[in-house]
Amino acid sequence: MATLDEDDFSLIHALQIRPRASWTDLAAALGTSPATLSRRWERLRADGSAWVMGHPRVRGHDGASLAIAEISCVGGRAGTLAQELAAWPMIITIEEAARDFGLIVTAVGLGPGDMPKLLLDDLSALPGVLGVRAHHVARLHVDASSWRVGGLDPERARAVARIPGHAGTTSTPVNPWAEPYAALTQALIRNGRSSAADIARQTGRPLSTTRRQLGQLLASDALTFRCEVAQGMTPLPIVVQTWCRVPVGDVAECLTRLRATPGVRQVVGLPGPTNLLISTWTRSVESAMLLHEHLQRDLPLEVVESAIVLRQIKRLGWRLDDLGRSTGTLVPYPPSTDRTSHDGEPSRLQG
Image 1 (cartoon, rainbow, N blue to C red):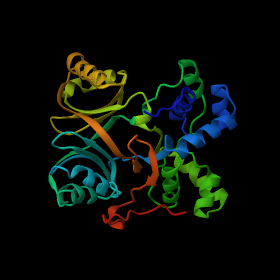
Image 2: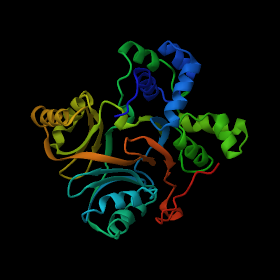
Image 3: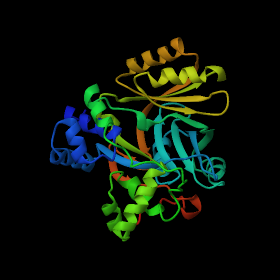
Image 4: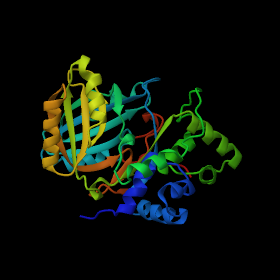
């Protein structure tokens, strides 16, 4: 299996800590040159092994919502259905597992009617779909943006963490989908390291205006920035989704311990009796089994169901190949689905 070298993982880890840091600052922390880092990054980004993106936060207000749906379909239909759903902007992540409800998708809605229509009407109406189990996301306890690939020793990781992040914060709420920020948001989804000059060229706006608006958008904390890596090119090829039942009084303890558990990439809070969904990346099926046993034995939770993900088709809008590399095709989700059809023609970035 193709993989990445130690210098690749070091750079990816550094960008997971400070996704928008300058090459000069990163070079000083990593003990190399800005030109070396820039060349390495361009290679990683060009072949789809790693990429940085801005991801608008879904805060649950003004109709904004996030959901995870498990889809059961007739035999032999899952792969075709996954490719069809990959063109839907509202479906931002798609994974395929060998189980009855074999497609696991994450959907985002930014209008009050978006999610009911998708979950109750659109998905069920697809040919070959036998059933849909939907889980509305109540809280993102552990975000995948906090996961680290483990390429840096603690000293260098601390040096990177000392690089200043966004210049200050503001309490003024910013809607990343509203003008004048929408075009900037779309540019940052495509390339989270885009500078004000890059965005000004793409949008045709004056540089001074773009710089000011970008500063406001970044300071608002309306976007989460993530350095993604092709999962199949890491030493962690096994992805497991685990649905758990946790007594309400034990949730806080579980979260504290899960945050300290190697391999845990994301933890989502769900309403209802099955109230935690844990996503893990591990080295082998045996490692996944040991982690499963740890969850059952050492944490105050009950594992309801687990699924080994065999294929990742889409992650946060990016189409992936069989190794989890970005194919370069982005299907960005729009401000609301009334601007987008589900006919395989997703809205495209302008500029």
